[in-house]
Image (cartoon, rainbow, N blue to C red; front, side, top):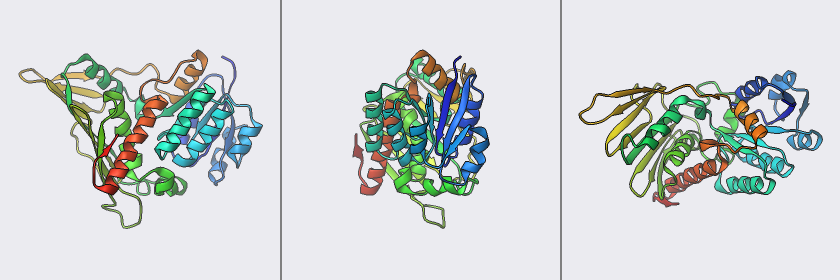
Amino acid sequence: MNSLRVGVAGLIHGHVWGLIDSWAKVEGAELTAVADNTPLLERAKDRFARTYTDWREMLDKETLDALVVTSDNRESAEIAVTALGKGIPCLVEKAMAANVADAERMLEAQRASGKLLMINWPFCWSPWVHELKRQLDSGVIGPVFHFRFRNGHHGPKEIGCDEWFVGWLYDEERNGGGALADFCGYGAVLSRWLFGMPSSVFGVRDNFTKSYDLPDDHAILLARYPKMTAELEGTWATYGFDESANPVVHGRDGTIGVYGNTLRIYRAGREVEVVEAPDLDVRSPAAYFATLLATGGEPEGMLHPVVSADAVRIVEAGRNSAASGCAEPL
């Protein structure tokens, strides 16, 4: 494999360190340059050939084959649009953008450049996600009428995220919300991938448990489809989760409950069918991205920018609905 020159723009997205580790394991990949204007640059500098405090300077001076974009949701969109305009393929860490307008700008930049744009959702590398899709596509529980998915923890600050990650997660302008943008986004992209776009979204969010200001620490979106509903819950307020299935899908002929990487299929008059999700051939976003670069392929499923842009639309509709108290049409 020819050398693959990789740059990283931004270190304030806490997922960046796992992505750097991921790229370090890709044969032929070189961690060429990193740009960040916080003290986090000191932590990363020994892993890269060159460092910059300004991502624009890095893009001007370096010849890169791939760019990992890991700033806040507003700046990440700006970085991706600029990099794609320079012909640099981009791997953007979730979420795609803080708002629909920025997601649209990214899609347009990708179309104009013809370069690869992939939005990385960490749970896309979990086997259960793909086994659930396979089971639903097989029709094992018939037409689906309800889906619910709950995701989160008890708060970025509380679980030990660094001050630069917390700083933008708690900023509505830079994040697009609080737990709504962070964790309802996972549900939105999963629901969009599995079932398509809803016709409307009703949202509820608030700061229910924190003694300090933040956009919201718990949110629920109810997405309405022509013949089904999707209940998408995101939390920064929950200490401990019960052991019930998550997600759960109800169909005309049965129910699928996911327990880790085990799926249980419940149907009337039959024994519970237990399905273990098989391991994925690729479980690394960097290896997958490198393969797409080598083959000229497009990202599939939730990693595709159009699907991720639709997830931004769902979240933004939920945010607008929470403000108005009315369902927001899509």
